[in-house]
Image (cartoon, rainbow, N blue to C red; front, side, top):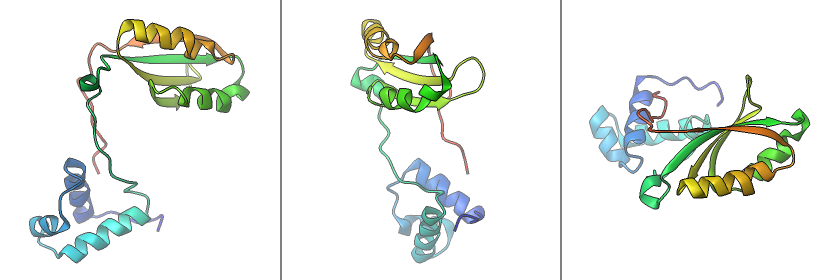
Length: 152
């Protein structure tokens, strides 16, 4: 089901579920003038096609005390160290995203910390202690004016 092409109804269903993943299929059916069975079938097809990969709870990190967000560009000593470095970075709870990139850095990560002292500790005692890392550059986020999912 890899070649499943979404239509306007699928797009509408996806947008509604992205706004509220707990919305009942019956409510979607009423909104889009189709049966609840149609909604169920469409959602299942999009799951099978890998378009819908799950549902999640969105958490406000600041409300949990994570006030500092930064991005860290990482240069590796050798490209062959990528997999092992990613495995080590994944073990640090403060690392919330990682990307293998072209350009100035081998890896680009997003880190959330509770304070500047906490960030310093993460940098010195976790990230920069990884033997395969040659150097890092840290960019501190002052604000995140745009945060959204891609629209179907």
